[in-house]
Image 1 (spheres, one colour):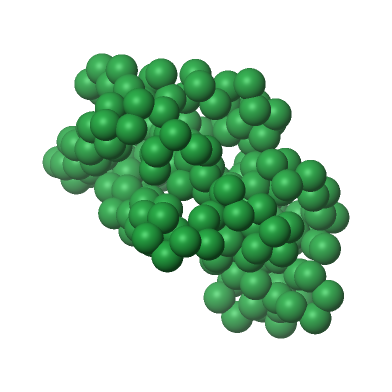
Image 2 (cartoon, helix red, strand yellow; image 1 turned 45 degrees about the vertical axis):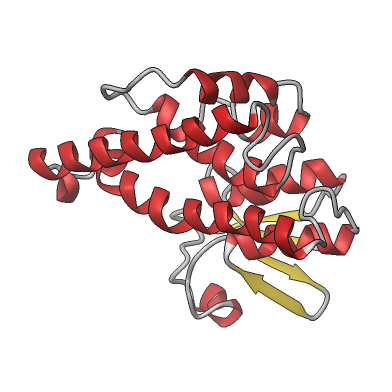
Length: 206
């Protein structure tokens, strides 16, 4: 099993944390650097999308971080992380999809301007709107965690906690005005003794 990407990428770290939970240690092949950019023909031969992460398992090549995480859990037979029961699984996947679409889209402008210092995003009004939307959606997550009192989808740690934990770490480390979200704070602390969380989430990388 081989994982293509950079270990500081938020989407690659989802996969690495999932692997840590499963006891997997895929061979890491670094792509996304100046030496090996993702528009290199050799990388595009693997995936025309030109995006990391990419998981190669035998003759299977998978892209999309949340899909890779789901595959790995099924591969390992770890149903507690992604329930085989349709109703429970749908709830987990709904929060994973929300992370990949609504939440990720909310922070892109603010994060790229404030943390990455990308001048193409440095438009004050757009950064303000992005920050406000990001905070609003994080408050929605806080409400959900307040209802469950434990993890995103209930009393059991699941893949939803991995993908949303990475997004929350990014929110925590982005220097902008933020509301107090006590349920989010308690949830992150609740996960703090997990080796995968320590190595790939709360590791001072936004």
